Length: 73
Image 1: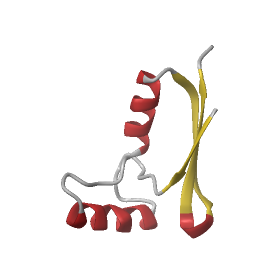
Image 2: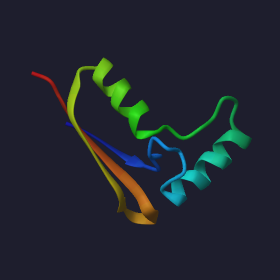
Image 3: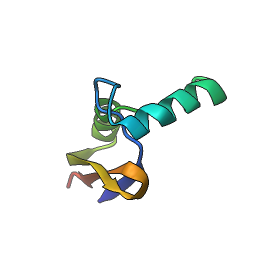
Image 4: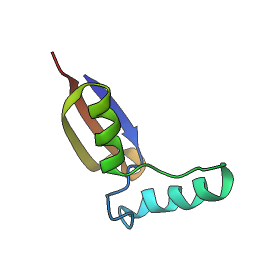
């Protein structure tokens, strides 16, 4: 299992609000910086062999999200 806790953007990139705010900071502070969307996380995890990806938006402190996935057998 893998657990990712942080500000994950919905694929629309306009929600949740806390993730949008972090995205604006990342764009202005880091070269090529930006918050990753749910779809980007799903794609990267699939390439690494993970399945059953579930995202729980605003489930962690500070309105962060929790992403859970399982490594395929």
